[in-house]
Length: 368
Image (cartoon, rainbow, N blue to C red):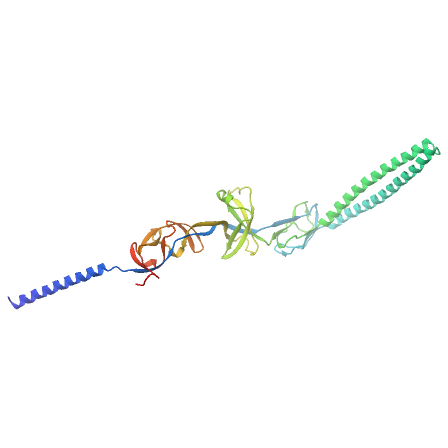
């Protein structure tokens, strides 16, 4: 055999040896299974607040329309639209001249009625005392029957006059009190802090009875929420509600629920009063009605993964298994899920490096 042929055969044998050696090493690597380190927690049922979430609008709790109890000419307006007012501030006043004249006339009539009733009372009391004297004399026969009858008639007459005087006095007193109240009510005062929303009339204009002369918007804020009929029975007056406006959170109370739905939206307005914060009117608010506590499977949101559907990893016999879950709701950094049960071992750290069925080593139960 030539040297050249021997060299070629030798090279082939060496190459084959290298191939078989590589295959053997590959098989050894394939046999070795890499173990992933994870941290876990046991799944347990726990209680979280049961919330009913809606969006609402910030509004003023009170919009008060101040009007006069009698028509008249507007004498003076003490505020302008946009002004801030405090409780007790003078708002507007009718022209007082005519009202003062009416009050003065009623006062004079009352004084005259007081004088008349005084005179009528004195006359009646005198007639009564006279009748008693005549009656004694009549019993003794010292006074004629005619004189006795005249004394009785005098008592009856003066009593009737006294009754008329009393009726006139009551009428005059009622008119006086009414005219006095008109005079007092001719000046409007704010009964709460707020801002002037509207002044519909100008000075010297005639203003009808009951029409608003000044409209005040109160400072206390409420959140108006349109609640669907299906949720109406779950919300009650006095219930707590958590309000968030532009990241600012506060606690409120449900203070009113409309008995009839809005004609357009067919929702029932629930009013949530917030005392601590004065939000900007018209702001959109997130409102969570506190319905109590709910016991369920709640897991940290950081345990969740998604590839089109939500899933977690659950450890069984040192292996991590992909488990599909259904998210029902969230609260803070936890979510309520279906698909897990109490006692499951949930991976809460290291799950991004896992695949279904991979072997794991739980931190705290032996190192790698």
